[in-house]
Image 1 (cartoon, rainbow, N blue to C red):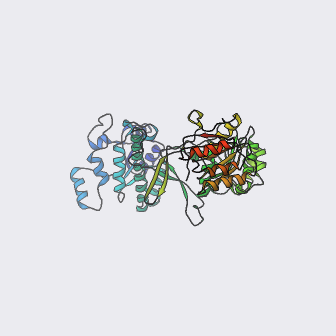
Image 2: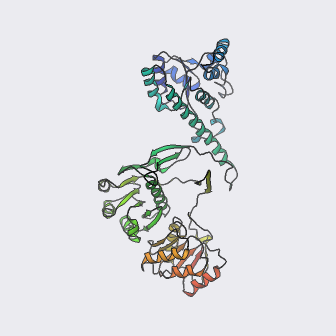
Image 3: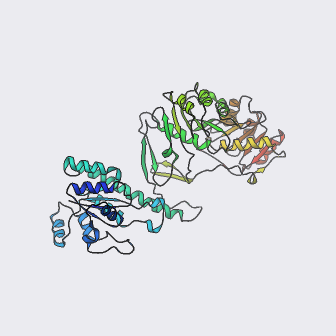
Length: 499
């Protein structure tokens, strides 16, 4: 039996090769893998000895030869194949162990592997006869199977082949993505080739009768892969979905201590303060009814005082960059509370959403507060305090489902109207929830007011400043309504619908 070993990631390859040799296998290898095995005292047959041809073109051509690929691809059940190998003096290769250059970590033309993917695909195609191994974590399993069965059983070879094709598909995906990044600015690529691998099984999907899992993009960084769950039940689909919304929002609100409370992917409370525990209390106070069963995201290390304030509230998940020891002990004592710790989000360039038979793709929305691009449309300018609340409200509004209205006073959301078909209804909901707390504060609308009735509904809350994109044919009527009330109104020129 012969095995061809050619790996970039040499983790465990010496032990694997030694184990194969000890079990009577012949090991063929090339390049750096052959050197590593030789230095470890393992007998190796160089690829050049098999092919009769030296490496050439700075190593671009090593294994691309009939003596290698004939040995991998020959169908052992076909007499003609075996006779032809015998005529040419080519021996069969029964196992291929190969992983590829890490293109994603250092993309360049020279990191595009040719021989490796060719060997992997050839072995995977011929998995009825050949075992292909691309994952170093499976080396121990391979040696155990050789001891237990004398070979690699067919079902295992099939699973190994599936993993091999996934490996080469992800590799090609990384190369296509690199070419796209070198392409035209301001254009979406002509095709997308995401490579997703299962990161964790979830308790269930959106509902208990649905199966759910979280997949990672193998070419991207995810804060989820660097997070730690300290306590609580396994995450469900909606736990992940809502926690993502909460973590993205709280990390977009600026440098001050901030807490966001999320329910059904919408903020039901956001607040900033000089003290993180006070920020939590203010965020919860925005809408304590909706906060029941919600997600709490904190952009500071959580102290015991915050953990104690959270204790009376049924909360599904709390996520933060860290926890003081006594706070962590208090939080993890609650069996149903999932306690997550993680870094800030890394950010995605594209936003994808599934539709029947395909995907909707767009660039990711970024909410900015660049006053130089904004226009004060009313006779009255905002006061310094109103500017602070306008910017805060604008950031929160970008995270609220459309139609969205957010009322803010002193960097505390006090009323949020989300997901209504009518902007007037969203305004009325936000005003009702504010219950008088928005007086002298600011309002944000994610899109323009098509009629003055939306502004009138917002004004009922007592806010004195409004921020919105502008752009309606009735903007003059809406501005006039604001002037009538002595309100300041800012046009951003940029809409932030969220569906």
